[in-house]
Image (tube, rainbow, N blue to C red; front, side, top):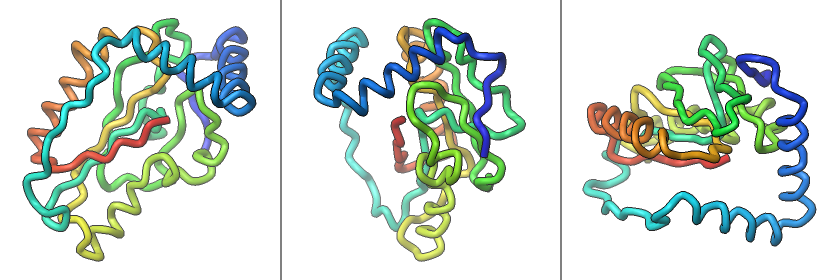
Length: 179
């Protein structure tokens, strides 16, 4: 699997990406403090709780990732957008690992480039369905590109769009895989 960008990524953004990943590895406690501070800028940090209404073994399950996983045929995320690309990509439920690539700057995706299941465990969901441990794999799943410094469009447009599609698909559970 390869990494994809819609346009060449500026040297400044590549440098920033390497610095962020280096800070995360070298000074994890400092990185956690900075991340917590930055997270406060997003506003309300409470997580709405929705109780599970039926057994997992009867539930339709979808994946949602911020790992920048896209189909090879899809438009890559705009990695040069200073606010971060808050759009999303739809991944069909029958996609294979060979169909997928990474379009993301702000995490070390070396292992994900070898095996997308690390970030986007779609085949694992199919295995769980075959074993009867989940009811059904959803017909479509969704991928976002993390590293969004201005979440306005994400909150006001893209996340509600995805939520409506999940409801339309009668998805009972969504597994989130953050980058």
